[in-house]
Amino acid sequence: MLIQKQVDTELNPAQFHLLEMFSFMKQQESINELRAVLYDYYRQKVDAESAQLEEKYGMNEARIEEILNMHLRTPYK
Image 1 (tube, rainbow, N blue to C red):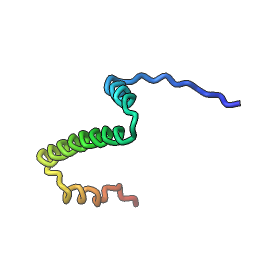
Image 2 (spheres, rainbow, N blue to C red):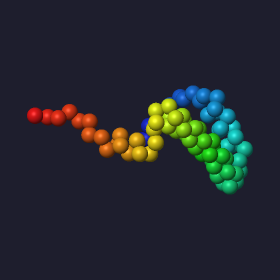
Image 3 (cartoon, one colour):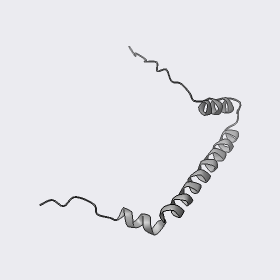
Image 4 (cartoon, helix red, strand yellow):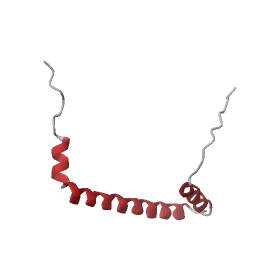
C-alpha cells in the first residue's frame, strides 16, 4: 500500500503569475518561447550584477581565476 503525503505550499505572487501564464499555453513552442524570455531576463540581471561587482571590487576573469587557485588552507604540523 502506497501512502502519499500531501505537502501544503504557498506560492509567492510571481510564482502564481507564472503558473497562470503557463496554464494558457497549449503548444510546446509557446512554452519554450516564454522560457527563453525568462532565461534572457535573468541573464541580463546576472550580467548587470557582474558588471557592478567588477566596477566596485575590480572583479574580472583574471581576479576570479586567481581566487579560485588560492590555497588558503590551514597548514598542519
